[in-house]
Length: 423
Image (cartoon, rainbow, N blue to C red; front, side, top):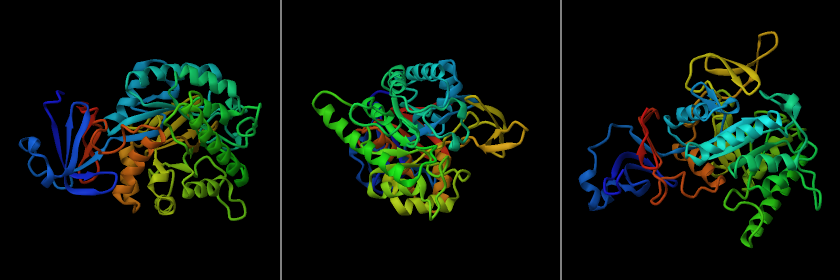
């Protein structure tokens, strides 16, 4: 698109602070040039203003999914070619996720390194915005749909190797703080959290059976390390700058010791940290992983600045029911719900999601969360966690990533870097 040929989009425009009933977004080149009410549209673009849009037309920022294992029949943990991984990324892009972090699962060392190198090619090529490693330093007791046989104690050397294979694109890693070597280090004794911060990777609490004090200590250690890394970077060393100064929690509630009034576990610790502004929680608000009342309650408790809506999608996203893979695990999807296939053929634990992020936004709004808050948690907050000040909001100067939906929040048009995404 030439910068002299603007794209002018009109509808109910969702900015970080308000919903403009009759608003306009102007794209020129690859950036957002202007956002505001139609009555204030500068004269230079008035000749390009569309007629009154179809009632219910909504203009959102391109969504950002920070936890996604695949879609369109392909899985990031199983991809052995750029084409396979690109198919998965494209499935979510067509549905409005213009910023996608590809998630791996626990696997042998050589597999993790090979997949990270492959996915780094897609980050360099613009198909992805980062890589997330969900493991391998996790609790076998809370393994969920992952293979406990491949889980390891905390290994700073593996963190460094994985970061090198990812060529600096390893943006987050899920860790269980009670696992030896993860969060029990100190001066002269590095642990996984310290290695992650040094690599510019945000640690994320998840797949954990830890009691609350262990999680609280890990959050405090991680926050101190992130702050120290930021200071070191300012004088020429330390962690990669710009990413979150806060840890995150991987799909809060799922893959964790449950909340109990005499054993609060990781959930209470993470919620308290989020309420203080010290941590950001992921929620798989797809109507399957969490009850809608739970989703609404967490928004009421901690607010959208401390919540990232995610899909945890696997290969079946956008695909019919059937049998799929998630790393080494066999998965069967029935009624849109993915579950492990147990040895006897029965359905086991939920094995990732099958929704696109716009579906999660819709389900979150249906749960009683306002559209403004839901969109903030599906775009603006994850962009902030990733340190991407160029993404995640309809603000002039940011990249031209826009999702246009109908009254049912179904995608109508998607723009990435100002270019219309074709099917």
